[in-house]
Length: 321
Ligand code: C5P
Image 1 (cartoon, helix red, strand yellow):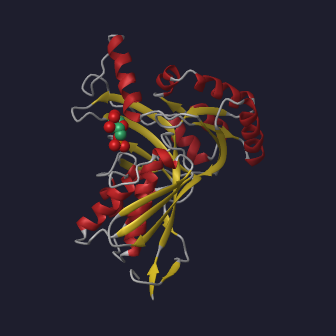
Image 2 (tube, protein in one colour):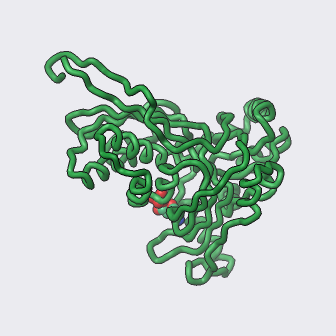
Image 3 (spheres, rainbow, N blue to C red):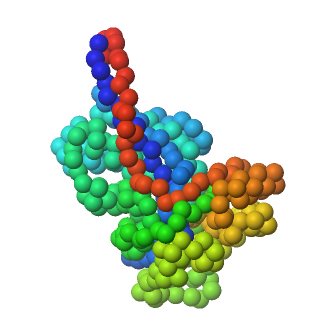
């Protein structure tokens, strides 16, 4: 009989309050001006020592998430192990709540949770700052997913500046019955720019700039001003690829949301609302309308991923114990 220590981490989704998209760089990425906010919609990642690295996935949309070494959380475990000269013998179990291919950085949250969790499981003592820079090797949104809170991201979204937040913001997230592929949405935006004879490369378009109005609204906790300042350059592209998103947007604002905005490259729509009561009303009306698959009430900012306070202790018996 032996004791196998598991670590469970809750990793939050993000919403982009601003997503300014510049031109395509030589490395294929686009210059971004992105204001991120973590919200209280979580995946739960449980990390248990095992012979080999393996992944299991449960929860909403689990069938669309790879359960092998290509899973971004598995890659995160492998990367952290490699940099610390360790064998990545961990069973990663992901319980999904964050919509898959929903533009809310679900995969990045899982990777961030795996980094934070394995750092604790292996007692590595790697600082959050070091984990943030390691995270950039995994994906553009992973550094913010490690940090949490609110931040401005430039470059491909990985160069972060922490932003002050004056008040909790309340949201309803309407998930679509389909996902949108991030590369496909960026490619469609580029095609439209080219077809319109507009510049589309990073040297032809000035780098997008942070919305100072949005930063001020966030710092003051001025929800009405914030609602007015929300923007996402990918929204017209995503709604042209999936016109049904326009109906979701209309339904949420007609139901009393202050504003609606596409999350990342879609397909989830985030609705900013005045308070929790308004959130419940908007969520109910969205669900009744049939214009979305599910509606989640959440608020933000919330802290980045942290191991849950009481690590689980599993008593294992038998041959493989
Ligand atoms: O960095 P990550 O692997 O998460 O990016 C996924 C895809 O999103 C990229 O392959 C690219 O098509 C697109 N992307 C982009 N510019 C960025 C971030 C992502 O074009 N700044």
